[in-house]
Image (cartoon, rainbow, N blue to C red; front, side, top):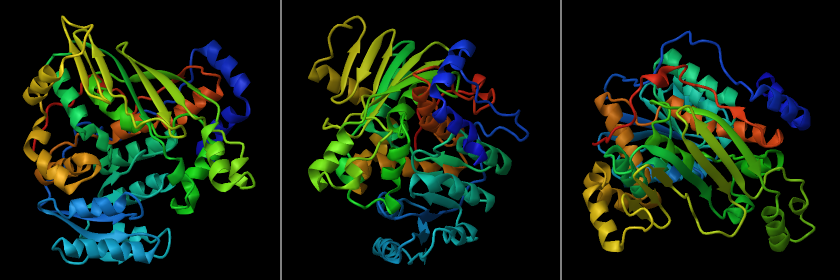
Length: 450
């Protein structure tokens, strides 16, 4: 395919690419000047009711159906899945929540288009495997629907650009559903940053360390897409859970932007050994020449000179960790477990009492106002519900979204960019400016409420 031609050249000539990149500094991945209008800070007409069509109710989708059915002025009116039993089960969950049964669509990979074409749907919610995200989001916007998409929003730089351009053309919201931006620790960190307690932000560490080999190999992924992807790709294929919050603290795309990155991956050890132990050495998956590594480590430098380390590993027996470290000239916050050090006592973390007092004072308004409701309605401790509640609040009130298409594109672009860097021997790769300069005057995300 045209959009992958240069990428495949990189894969087939990594040594030559590394030399050329070293000579040139780094590759450029820019785009032609914008022909439409920026959607930075986009506002859309208020909705009287958020009427959601959900595509994909295999893994994450059923939870979204249940949560959205419990948000005021929000209804799930249509559900789509390849499998009829999944679609019908989620439809029954909507009825159990006290709403009319939604229309169900099933039976093919193209039937989602009927959902997007419904006149009563005004928000399409995409919970499908990665390869469907871009075409489904594009079609939803072509049908004049706002769209929100599970992470990553796209797996290629070209896919990211296509979403940006469609959003600019249609003047519609296109949001990546990065739930970790609404975690309790993450919004506490945002409060400390916006209130100046951390000083000038300098560096962030983040990641997604999660033991997921059992789920990857148990056949529950549609067509084993994720497993197949890891056979053919290296780099960081799931960067946004840790990166999104750090980017929001730093005002990435809003006063600063990613400039370039370098990335390295370890060898693959854990996945093939897990398959051998669980399914036997004769299982073909035990001897695949996997390109993915057990651990991916990337360092990003921003235009303003800040740095971010992003790690990704799902094949080793380590406790769950998004790291979530943000360091400034006056202090540092680090999660897993939550710790804070503030000037002038940089050498020690606050004790339990001082940390509890600080957290009570700087609890984010979203958690203060709807945190208990969110915990009851679930979704990774409540952050999914807060994300969706805030999304619906913005649509109902004609407000800009907390995450826009430029954020989804910049954060997701690491999927391809880290692979480019790894295949180039860890050489520097430029990160495209998906905002085409609008980042220079945009304001960082503030302390939002409902």
